Structure formats: C-alpha cells, structure tokens
Image 1 (cartoon, rainbow over the protein chains, first blue to last red):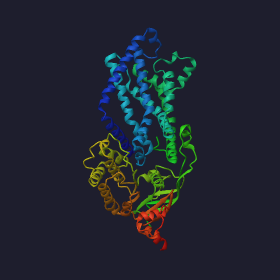
Image 2: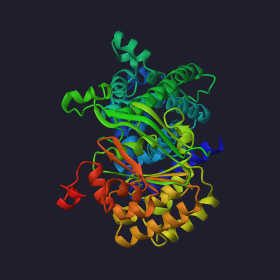
Image 3: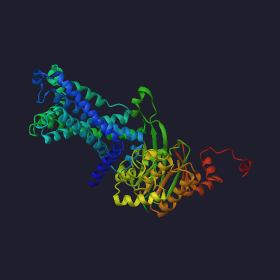
Image 4: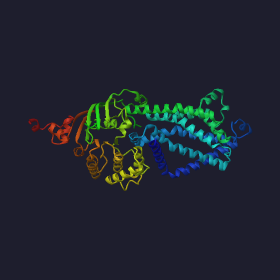
Length: 271
Length: 272
C-alpha cells in the first residue's frame, strides 16, 4: 500500500514537473477560460427570456446552466482522453517499455498517469467558475461544495472506465478513441449540456435518461446552483457509482487482455 | 546447486504477419506464423555473463524482451531466479534491470536526475538508496554534470549512459542489456565495460545477459557465448571453446562458421 502511494506520488510529480516547463501554458489557459466564460455570458444575455428561465431545471439562468454544461464537458473529455494521451505519449517517447519493466503494477501505472490530468482539469474548471463569479455574476453563494466534490469524484470514476476501454482500443489498433466519440457525441445532444433534455423528442429523452452524463450533470447543477446536499443528489451519485463499479473492473480486465495481446503479437511499441 | 539465474526451456516465439490497410484490424487476432525463436534452451548460473551473438533478426532482442516480460512466448518456459516470466511477471521484474538498446525511453522535458528518480521510485528505491546509487553511477558513467540538464538537451551517447544507469540503479540480480554500447564513443564504451566487469560482475551475485555485435566486448565480458541463427541456438560455450571446436582463430571466424556464413575454407585449411 505504501509502495502504491509512493508510486502514485511519483507519477503526479513527474507530470507536474513536465507541466512546469511549459509555464506560459498556464497563463494562456487562464485567458482562454476568460474568453470562453465571456462568450457564454453574452450568448446567455442574447437568448435569456422568462420562458427560457422557466424551462431550466435549476435557478441561475442560461449563463449558469450553459457554463456548467461546458465545464462539465471539459471534465468528461479529460476522463475519456487522459488514458489515451498518456499511452500515446509513453509509446512515442519510448517510456512505455520502461514503465512496464518496473515493479509497479498495471493498475497503479494507469491510475498514476491520470492523477495530474484530473487535478489540472479540476483547476481549469475552477478558473472558469472563478472568472464567471468574479466578472459575470455566476451565482456561487448557494453552492454545496461537498456535494460538488462528491459528484465530480463519482463522475471521474464512472467515466475513467470508458477512458481505459478507449486506451485498450488504442493499444490494439493504434489509433482512435471510439468510446469518446460515441459518448461525447451522444452527450452533446442527449446529455443536457447546453439545453435541458425536456426540449428533446420523446425517443431522445429516453436515450438521455439512459446516459449517465445526464445524471451527473443534473446533480452538478443542483449542487452548484441550488445548494443541494449529498442527501438530495444521492440518486445520481448511486447511478454513477454503480456505473463505476461495473465499468472500472471490466475496463481494467479488458486493458490487461489488450496488453497481453500486444505482448503476444509484438506490437506494444508499434504506432 | 544454486538456482539458475536464467532458465530457458524449449522457448518458441512466433509473430502474426504484418498487415496494412484494413487488414491491420485483424492482425491482433491472426495466427502467429513468422518464427522468431524456434525452441531455445539454456541456463545461466548466478554471477555468469552470457553474450547473445547473432545476425540481425536472429532473435536476440526477442529473447531479451520475453525475459523482460515485454513479450509473451508462444511455447516453452522462461524463468528468472526461479520466477516464471509468464506466470509471475512482477516477481521477474523485481529481479531485472533492462536496457533496450536505444536512446529513447526518457521524459525529454525532465532532467536526467528527475528521470532516474522517477524510475527508481517505480522500482521501490528509497530516497536514501537513490542518493547513494546515483552518486556512485554518476561518477562511474561521468554523468555528474548532465544530471541537472533536461534530457532533450543531451547527446544520444549521454542518454544511452543514462539508460544504462537506470538499468543498474536498483541493483538488479539479472541484467538484460540489448547492445549496451551501441551509441557510446570508444572511451565511454570502454569505461562501461570496465565498470560492468569489475563492479557488477566482479561482485559475483549479478548475472548479465547481453546482445552485442561488438566481438571484443563479447570476449571481454562473456563467460559464455550463445550463438543464435534464425531463432535457433547454434552453440553455447566459452569463447575459447567455440574457437577450438570450430578450428577458428578468432571469435568472428567461429561465429561465421557456426552460422554457415563462413567464407570458403582456404586450401591449407581444407588439407588440414
């Protein structure tokens, strides 16, 4: 256990040290966030109306609704992309073989590769929300931060499984991230990111209700905008945790199988 | 009798044929038909140095990768210090130091020291042990002045020295080195061989299996030489015994004769 924690810390420190060599990126990302938030603010000013406010499931207006949808998409993207990107970088830099001959187990290598990207994405989201709150009146006074943290964590766990499945695909077929395309594609329409699912036709509403993103997003908005506590958002939390409990072990098993396959075919380092 | 450092029995490895276009999607599931190793068997005792000698494609790197748990054999068994490379790969990895023979495998934006610390940590090296080992290896491989520089600024020879230091960092019982001096200049290569001979092999508890095309290096370091050809073990003996058994004056000649690449025997040799 101590070894595993030390190994996870080593991965985090590695990625933080690499990120520190690109210092201007932090500044540019903060500016990018400012422009993004400003765009959502003015789009909201353009489209907001009493009817629209009434159609939204939470308070805060369309600006708050769409901004949360957007930053949540960023989070989802990180969960789906991190394992792929780490694998690609390790393969292209030649470090993959050297990671795999260390005494560190495969689950720790996978988890370790994801820690810094998840922390960085959380920080980026915080910057978005901070710009929104400081400059454009994003309502934070009612937020229940414990519930927000619980929803984020459950979301990460739930969608990391899909990210690991994508990495397994990449390991075998060298290019592509079909799980990401599928989930982000479906969720951008039937996930309630930029508009409530009540505006969708009935059959797409059924798809949206089968999509865990819908639950995660609803819980996130409820916790941030309406101050819903963990007792209130327990239902979507349970959905996400069940999703994680099924998908994480399954994805780890699939990744281990894909790795064995590449060790059989000799294509581990092939591009 | 002490447990063999490396035991390989009837080891076979075949790969599926390379495919392009849409057929590449089928490759992970195709039958392995391209033979890389064809029934290899040998043992190494603790502290022994064995050189793998063979032409390109003879199967040397494939063998090293199987022992490093980076490839799975098609048939047969490969063990390191009694641990099976297929059934117990983590135990095997706790025994080995591996050098892949290239100057890749480091994080370009990290310094040499940061890279080594990271890999040391993944091999369960404490800070104190890391400090002790890095001081020793930096001195031996003349890395003191480059450890603080980002790897992307280092020459390929320096990165290769860093890679060798990484393989030795956690004091493994078995060293698997694929062409360890390939990118090194003559001085660095000579110093590395001297270090291996006196400091690593001299202790008597570390075994070395290495692939090399540099025959003086093989003669200097190896107790025995395994001559490979098309995935088969043609001979495995001391350099002197190989020369004697083939009637060759040099190891190069012995290798040529054993692999059937020998130039025609001279009239004198034929008469003899």
